[in-house]
Amino acid sequence: KAGVTQTPRYLIKTRGQQVTLSCSPISGHRSVSWYQQTPGQGLQFLFEYFSETQRNKGNFPGRFSGRQFSNSRSEMNVSTLELGDSALYLCASSIQGHEQYFGPGTRLTVT
Amino acid sequence: QKEVEQDPGPLSVPEGAIVSLNCTYSNSAFQYFMWYRQYSRKGPELLMYTYSSGNKEDGRFTAQVDKSSKYISLFIRDSQPSDSATYLCAMKLSYNTDKLIFGTGTRLQVFP
Image (tube, rainbow over all chains, first blue to last red; front, side, top):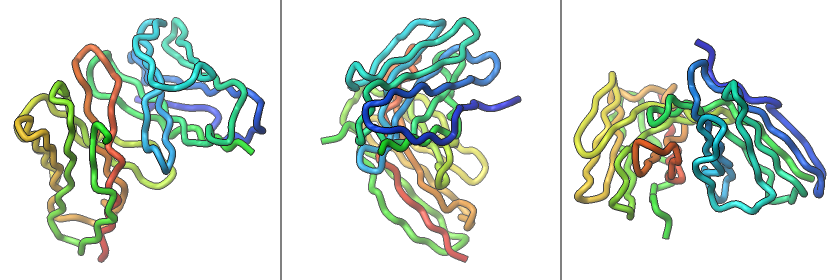
């Protein structure tokens, strides 16, 4: 069974630009969550989706948004990028309520 | 104060040692507890998933949860150099959410 896949794996953007990251969950998983990982703050929850509905949102500004499609694939978008948005963005999928499995992440660098 | 506290290490042990990794937390409502292993530049890999208090064993790994003390542990027996990684504890409030609260991670190095 294929794991969680994330694209792209690496991204370099300039301050003020926007970016869209993609996540394909494990087949059969309908729950997708996103996390930001930085050396200073560690892993922080961004949002959680189940059946195309956002169920939870972390304490991040409105520049961070996401969505989930009917095939459970998910995207997150960050608008008006800031230097502090440089991080590893991780996606995890689960059969709702059960173990969560993470993808390899997208490493975003904002210059 | 963070909701979940974890000693960042690094923890350096010889091959074959028993490793003990720990987390404390402040929110007594947490019910589900996990341990992840993360190698450099990779995503976290789930090692253990437990519900409420008690012990769970899987191969060389044992997870312990003491809800009365708000303390969880991961023991690694017969540690190997391939166990060198960052170990993250995580927890969540209920079955109906996938929102995980993570510790900051403990970096473990197992030397031959």
